[in-house]
Amino acid sequence: MQELEILRNWITESHNIVFFGGAGCSTESGVPDFRSQDGLYHQQYAYPPETILSHTFFVQNTAEFYRFYQDKMLPLDAKPNPAHLALAKLEQQGKLKAVVTQNIDGLHQAAGSRAVFELHGSVHRNYCTKCHKFFDAHYMKAAQGVPHCDSCGGLIKPDVVLYEEGLDEDTMYAAVQAIRAADVLIVGGTSLVVYPAAGLIRYYGGHKLVLINKDATPYDAHADLVIHDALGKVFSAVVGN
Image 1: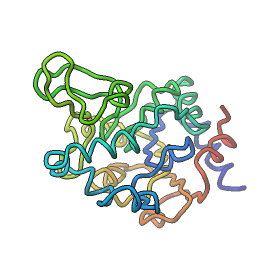
Image 2 (image 1 turned 90 degrees about the horizontal axis):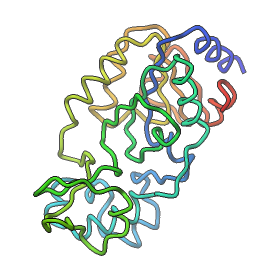
Image 3 (image 1 turned 90 degrees about the vertical axis):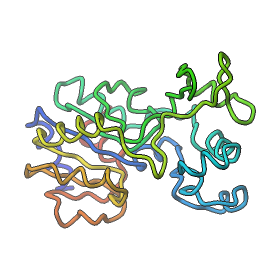
């Protein structure tokens, strides 16, 4: 496949690669894309995922928010897939300088990546809204009903960016700087329709923009290389594990 050979050559020649990924990078690890409203959602929840994962819903329907959060957002048994492992390998080789991710599952770090900018936060960081004590994802998974702080009794909130909330400015700034400096930008597993995160690729000024996604995206026409395939399959072929 000619596209794979081109990508392999670009990676070989580069020492400043940035990867920008979305849900498709985690679905291959069995992590569900909560935007896919299948029958299970309709059977168990009276609201669509985007409504449940909003700031207003968290405040007004906290118990229902946590029923969804514990059921759908804490896949603690998920393991890094070939895409995660390949990216970590590229970082260890000094080629990949940063991973910018819309995912909140921590799988990039579990694979060994260190320079990870989590645009939407992480389920592995949860804080008491009163005393700011930290709680990990396992505490949240095991909590009965609405989780409260075991020190002060305050409500615990995930360090996850909900709808209606702004992205962390420091994380956004770091992601923009990394993308601007990249000589190769690989965008994978994202439909590029969720803003402001999707707008980040506009900061890339190079000529090696790679889009890897099973389906077409609004940016395909602007990319220098487009591969419509699974991320894990592509990275296994190009980088190995």
